[in-house]
Structure formats: C-alpha cells, structure tokens
Length: 398
Ligand SMILES: Cc1cc2nc3c(=O)[nH]c(=O)nc-3n(C[C@H](O)[C@H](O)[C@H](O)COP(=O)(O)OP(=O)(O)OC[C@H]3O[C@@H](n4cnc5c(N)ncnc54)[C@H](O)[C@@H]3O)c2cc1C
Image (cartoon, rainbow, N blue to C red; front, side, top):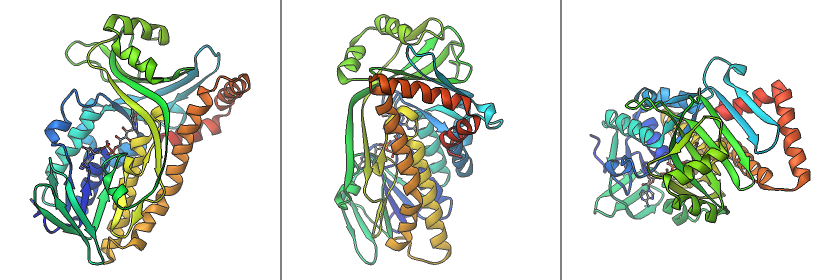
C-alpha cells in the first residue's frame, strides 16, 4: 500500500463521490489518500442508508471505465421507461428507452451496493490509494508549496492538492471561506423498500401530488422470496412525513395503495428512513490547492434523481483535468489549473439545479393557471418527439 505521507491528492470524505474520484485518480497513478470519519464497515451497515440511486446511463459509462460497474451490475435494475404525471390529471409523459436507442435510461442501485463496489475497487488499486478511516482532519494548512493535513489520530499528510467531498456540510469548503447559496424546501423525504403483486417491468414512476412528488423505482426481484420489489421516495411536509413514519406497516401500506394503485397490492415492510430536503450551491468550487466535489459543491432536490450523478460528473472532470496537468508536468494544485475544472462544471450544475428546483416549484403550486401550464407542458413534451428525446438524453447524462 502507498505510504500516506507522500501523497498527490488528499480527499476528505469517501462517500459515493469522494470514493469514485479516489479510484479515478489512483487509476491514473496519482497517489491518493481518502479520509472518512466512518469506517467502511459502518458505511456498509444495512440500516445506515436505505436510499437507492438512479444511476444515469452516462454515470454507468464512467463506472465501466473505473472498473466499478462490474462489481455492482449484479444488483442493478435497468430503467426501461419513466412515467411522469400529476395526480388526478389526464396528462402524462411516457419516456420509453427505445425512443433514444437500445440501452436502458439508467439503473436503480441501492446506495449500499454502490459503496461496496467502490470499496472493492479501491482495495484493488491500493498500490496508489490509502483509505484512512475512521479518522478526521484536525487541521489543514494550504501554502505555496502544498497542503499539510493533520489528522485527529496524530498522522500528518502532505500533498499538492486537497479535495473536499464530505457532502453538503463540508468543513473543508467552509474553512476555505467558500460562500454558499442555500434554501430549504421545508419538506422531507420518506424512503422505504416495498413489495408488490405485479411486476414493475423496469418502470420508474413519478407522481406529482399537492403535498410533493412521489417516486417509485424498480429494484431487483428478491433473490430469496421472488417478491417484486421497488424503492419509494415519498416527499411531503415534515408533519406529513413524521405522521407516515409513525404508522404501522398495515396503515402506511393502505395509504400507499391509495397514492399508487398501479402494481396491485403493495406492502411497506422493514426500516423506513427520512431525509430533510434542501438545495445549495457553492459560489466557487476551487481555490489555491483546493477543489470541492459532489454535495459539498451542490445539493439538489431528489425529484429528478440527479444529485449524485452530477457529483460523479464532477469527479470524472476533475480527474481528467488533473490527469492532463500531470502529463504536462504542471502543478496540480495551482488555481489556474483547477479553474478549468470549475469552468467545465458550471453549466451542468446550474442547469440540473434549475431543472430540479423548477420542477418542485411548478408542481407544488396549486394555482389554476399553473395547473393549466403544467398539463399543457406535459402534453407538448409527449407530442414533440425531438423535445422528448432531448430531455431523455439530458436525464441519461449522455
Ligand atoms: C432522499 C434522497 C434521494 C436521493 N436520490 C438520488 C438519486 O436517485 N439519484 C441521484 O443522483 N442522487 C440522489 N440523491 C442525492 C445523493 O444522495 C447525493 O447527491 C450523494 O449522496 C452525494 O454524495 P457525496 O459523496 O458528495 O456526499 P455524501 O454521500 O454525503 O458522502 C460524504 C462522505 O463524507 C464523510 N464525511 C462527512 N463529514 C466528514 C468529515 N468532517 N470528515 C471526514 N469525513 C466526513 C461521510 O462519512 C461520507 O462518507 C438523493 C438524495 C436524497 C436526500
């Protein structure tokens, strides 16, 4: 294993984005240290995070290149179509993957499986990658020569570049004085796994209700019982969600049946999780000897299932920019090099943030004019194939 004191890049936060970046850099022979406050064993505990991720087709291609996809594809359910509609409205958009080609629009994978795949690949490239967890950063100093990172366990690392990937509360970002713009949706998401009578046939559904969007995402059939399974993301006000969390399985299943009657009898069982919903964008993503990626740089509403896909595109771009600088013999921590990363990520970040935020606002407003516009919009998208294909490619990240 690489010796931790002689690093090229120190990444703080080994989550879905930081871990992916670490593998991408190690594969280009950078010496990388990942620091996470949680051990991999803790992060893989089944009860920690019940979320599933809609991995876009573009992100799947990134994982192919990184040798991660072959470690998760056994548990990845292809998304063959997406249905979006407003409750009690006759209009719907139906995105069929065959409209844009013969590949799925994406895959639904449990976050735990994605983490496992990243840890597994990180272990394979451990000649270049030191995974240091559980520990945390006690102090960092960035100067002309490089970055010095002192860990809480007394170890010291030196590198030309520090990357903040600790998620939306990133201390690395805040200590660097990078300002953020943030807002809360005054809403929460309830996450659970459900089983249902009829097969999902690879369909992901999004139902807009006055309380907030509801999504049901296809999961692999249970290998032991053969039950058809999906993951749900049920959003609403904190009061709505706390009430749903307190119901027993039979009562919440009955409410779910009313919201989503399309798969026959539907049952919620097992643990339920909840997450507050907010959005944030950092005013910059680089400084001298510093870059931030993933939720540390932007947090978006999960309505369009794009947050971590955006983060993986950050990781892919940053690895490309650093790889090019290394081949040219340039200082990878210099702000002028890092600015290329910031510039290349700006449009994608702004458009996903605006799209996700716009969808939530458009569909949560009960005015009759907006209701008319929504339904007309859904109708137009369905009737104009080039527009529909464009939206599909955007969502697929290709
Ligand atoms: C309900 C919900 C559903 C979602 N569904 C989707 C979806 O379908 N598709 C999609 O693209 N996105 C989705 N997202 C967004 C997605 O979950 C996030 O974008 C993603 O988790 C961000 O990854 P990250 O690695 O940047 O941060 P995180 O996942 O937050 O990881 C941060 C890592 O840093 C570590 N850490 C934190 N603080 C410190 C510290 N001080 N020192 C050291 N280590 C630290 C943590 O232990 C963790 O390992 C959803 C989000 C929510 C809330």
